[in-house]
Image 1 (tube, rainbow, N blue to C red):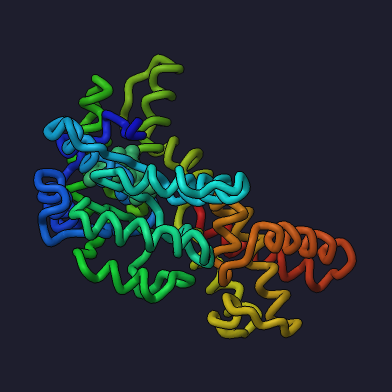
Image 2: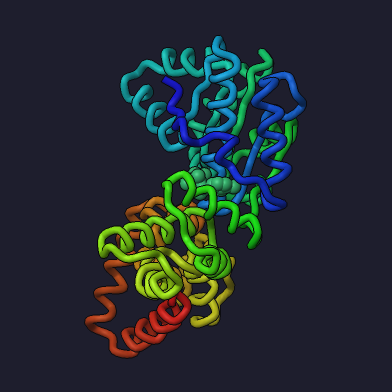
Length: 343
Ligand code: ADP
Ligand code: MG
């Protein structure tokens, strides 16, 4: 059981300036796992830019060409949960042994290890064992290693042994190619002006671009109409605003910090000062409302807090709105800012 999705291949992964280095490093690793100097290979980039697709493509390529290799893809979240279960059962050995047998370990979203000391220690040992035995390690994270708050220095320094490379948002031409490929694989043809319109307007991430295409196809087929520019525009107006647009956690944090006239670092730090706590709770409240991040992920972005802190923040904001009119007015004003941005 490799946990690989067959459709995530190199053939389906459109190349552009945005991903050329990551893609070719991935391809090199896929053809000579463990023996290139790209070990570990760490690919980082924002949400929906193709990290999971690319590392799965590496796994699939190896599985197809080198059948005797044990390739394993695992999300960091799953790794953590398996480890915690093993601890709970009081028997960590099978867990360790399992991971140490792997030939190619692909571990996705390692930012999730932040602040999890015991998991990092375990991963450190597995990493060392695999690396010493010339086994390939491939990792992804949502930010550059230097910004991986909450990861131990000794792990970060291991990452420098190999290659770290990033994925950027595809440029216009690459977006056009991605749309064409997707439509082709769905067996649907759409007019050139619609393709250009979509490529031009959806500049956030590839997942969102795919979301818009799926909506477009669904609407056209449900209403038995052709896909044309006016349908595309309607879809963009009505649907895209529900998908996370520019209003991400960073934007929310910055807006709230500015609004309450505090430093952005303080908002994300542990400070307990009252004004800062309030601004932080408000920012968490809006992060829950406007982004698709889980409570866990929101907590993580606020200096590695846990999900219960976020729940508490949301409750506090709701309570304050009932009792404090000027607080409520502030919330309304801030919400307007985020709404405007998300259209
Ligand atoms: P991430 O893991 O970085 O959040 P994913 O790998 O899940 O992003 O990619 C989101 C979607 O976009 C997936 O359906 C993926 O197939 C698609 N995608 C991303 N980059 C490309 C690309 N260069 N070519 C084709 N599809 C892509
Ligand atoms: Mg991913």
